[in-house]
Amino acid sequence: EPEVTQTPSHQVTQMGQEVILRCVPISNHLYFYWYRQILGQKVEFLVSFYNNEISEKSEIFDDQFSVERPDGSNFTLKIRSTKLEDSAMYFCASNILSGQETQYFGPGTRLLVL
Amino acid sequence: QQPVQSPQAVILREGEDAVINCSSSKALYSVHWYRQKHGEAPVFLMILLKGGEQKGHDKISASFNEKKQQSSLYLTASQLSYSGTYFCGTEYAAGNKLTFGGGTRVLVKP
Image (cartoon, rainbow over all chains, first blue to last red; front, top):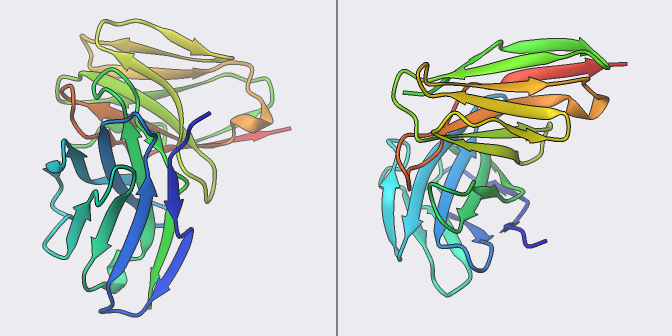
């Protein structure tokens, strides 16, 4: 069964460093999302992406964050200058037809900022 | 505006039933239910579109009450594997992000 994949599974970085989290959505999906989950808390929406542009973003998704679909398969989340509070699990999700299908989540990248 | 889930936690004996509610103050387009085990990604259980239909998946089913803007998830004859945190994700219009509730932690004991 096709699935969303994410790399790396874990990332440890120093405060102020840039990180890039990578996702390969399911191949025929058109809508892509990034969510994050701080340990012990609920899943929070960051950004949605469709047709090569951001369709919606949350207040969390400030200027330090950016997303890109550099080729036909990858979907990346970049954090330019990481802060301690960026430590969280980051999930990528995708779906084929928004509004009628659910979003399928990848296994997540655990980011730890020291 | 996040949906409100209740209860926050429930402890069951194997074979017992439980109901988890997800309420919204805003009109819903759809409700998505996920289960998350510790350290893992949320796993999709089912989606309910407005229309009040009930869905089932093994001994887990859900309903969507459009009048009340509420969805309920029913765990019937619970199994040990049902343990985890259940999240409802709500969509307020087609093509929107999912807004997740705070989660309901379920523990099924032998």
